[in-house]
Length: 370
Image (cartoon, rainbow, N blue to C red; front, side, top):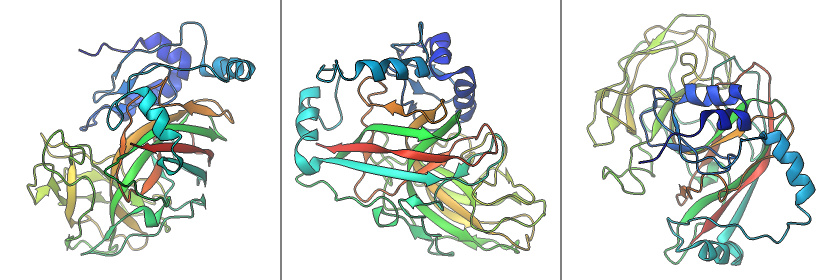
């Protein structure tokens, strides 16, 4: 049994606002737990909004205090070894270190994303934003849509010799504090025809996370859908996304998505969903989307662009302090070594922004193959 995280320590480390935001994000989550980066220990966000796993700090200091202390200690402690328990592709921590120093097995992904103005407690997508990597492309129209790969985002060379690639660490700085990024694998998208109430069939499918076997590395469970405003804001028309259908984690097709309330005049890049929602709800008992099969809007919205997307979460990356590099080292924090599949299209969502301010994120994340 994994014990609940000490709430006061977590709030002292990340700040009460960031913790409350993360908890709110997970209240209705249907997939597996998501690791919370940047928290010493092994803390995971669970469905229902709970946090579980040990936290190794927060008794007396915050992340800001630690950042100051770390800056003073980094020179004299440069060579200090750290301990952790490794799994999922690495036999031990020493094996991970060996693989990380083996040339091409360690991959660095620098990024700089200049976000757009958002809406309070609404999730925004950084998919269309530059500068590094360049802005992502719009998905194709129905019925095919677009199955995204690394050619559409961070390019990387897939591991060879039977190795698998895993998320190890991230370093992120945000120009506005209190934000949280979700690093995820963008699997699929389709451009919904607007100004129409007709149903549209979707036949295209993702190429990753398509196994119907629970426990498999590429199990569909945890695949989440979201509805994003593309490069053109919506006209001021009340609407709902209704009689939309999907194939679930068991491969059952034609399942009706619970009705999702859209937003009249929704601005670009925000999700056209309710406050504090970053994933669409699924039918009772379902925990993942294999593919979209049908799209429909309750009203004809004269102008605007809507994309129906599917993603799979990798890790939450909290940015509680303005312009401070927030470290998710993958060893002293949630050491989950989340799998990054070959050809993954890695992207970011700003989860339920605490303010409308446009935020620029700069940093990098690291994967290791083993």
